[in-house]
Image (cartoon, rainbow, N blue to C red):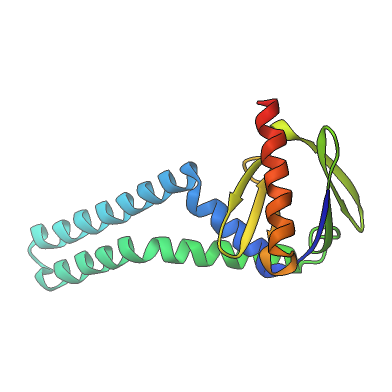
Length: 171
């Protein structure tokens, strides 16, 4: 069984956004960063008020901290998207963007691109479905990002069912 699709820049940005939003490590870092922002704002405004000289600055510093706590995750997501776009536009990504073909063999999933092929055993695969994409994850940071717009829905469903069947019989 085989499917073909084409990845563009937005497909890979979407995968990275999906990965980062669900990464336990990233979520812990966001919590710590937000706590540090809040702590700096609280201590900064308390210092200004306790010193007695800058009563007018305590509330704005606390407000800036509250805005920072709220805004930080949005800024971090924007930064990740921007960084991924820059890496992919850099030009050294042959075989990442463009045409991909996935083939199911007896023991593995084989991806073929213009630069070669990659074989992944079924034990390593995990299927993640979103409204716009299907990610066949092969490691914690790598996946085949299949845009639903490029593959017939019935063919994609049959392909994924077969991948699930083969991964479940091995596990």
